[in-house]
Image 1 (cartoon, helix red, strand yellow):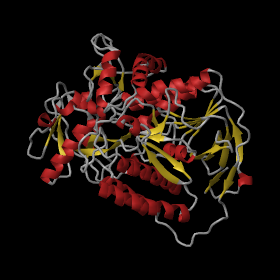
Image 2 (cartoon, helix red, strand yellow):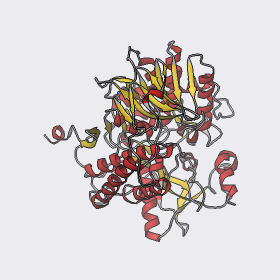
Image 3 (cartoon, one colour):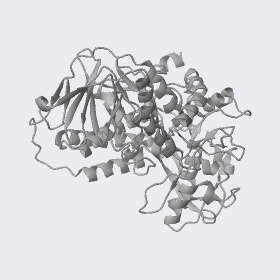
Image 4 (tube, helix red, strand yellow):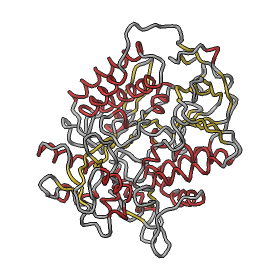
Length: 541
């Protein structure tokens, strides 16, 4: 029986019953809901904000799919494997890649409008790691909003999907046998509800808000991953967090993503002296994998004592204002003309590569618990995600998940509340504690790591987690902080466990790559995080 700090007595918790409860409404969650509803299942979708407040809505690049004659599934698979640092599951990669064309077709049938050439065929861009032009995009740099709107239209017209907006999912409920029995959440207005169901799908997106610098929306606090860990699921490869190389960097402004599609169109990176530095860093220059571009920028900033480098769009073929209207509008608000002025950029936390370990249909290690999209580790990305493969994964595996779930009789969802069981004598400054955590993660568990810094971070995070558990009031800000601290601890411990550099994980004290590629598993046992590499002994044999 789950014990939750919800501040409401258990006998005042209402119940609702659905075949499937999905937490999150982005590309993965909505695709799952539509697939399940098409089979006649009754679906509840729990949205933390409104239906457009998703990580998908913030995506700027596009969807990778093989749609041209000079491309092939084999080439897309090969590109993904090359980028993944030997940790991709080739079977998963091929299945997702081969599902790309149908995923794009489903979006178009739902009303998505993608950019096209004069002849009417889809206009395909190119991003880092991709050897072919295969990025489907909308309005140049606004693919995420277009994808979200199309899926939202589909969900709104599906009779068997009920959406709960501005709700907060607290935890997955499990029975004595460890199987899922439901989900506890607070609805808009504060009512606490237990959703009774045999199957919960976590599709909550990323966790960029654990870092000071991030491209993610404020809702991206790692809730799904934290809920999955507390429910007993195993997470995998949490040390691999992708930092996007180019976020607009202006003091006081949100860290707006400058899409990789800009570099794919000819944008180049320069330091404060105007020198282009990526040519010497990698044969593919600005279109090298993201981890390489990010570290090259970080090194150049450190060498010059700068807070940023610059993205130069002046040599792009065509009018940048027409090609990238979203970026143009944002920069213009700060007096920057992207056609002539260098755009200040720096790396920011962008994508959680690791996640809850799943199979190709989204099954986790807990019966009845599923995970899709960014909060899952399906085996597609390995150690370093390739640009625009993320929306592809959410669309393909989300659809597969909705088609694979077979509801069972889960029985009643029981929960015990901590209401009235404690009366903290000290009031926490949750805002200050959250910012302190974000700054610590950026300094010690960021682009470059060391064992010393990881150890210091682990000690501080453990202290903050205990303080939050004992003293925080039952409010959403505290629940988010609880989730972020658990995930930050899991990431830090996983990073300390991996004594090598691979993909998005770079250790200054272990700069070489280990000869054996192994995964890192993480799970909670008696309230303590346990980190293992289950294949290490086999790899060393």
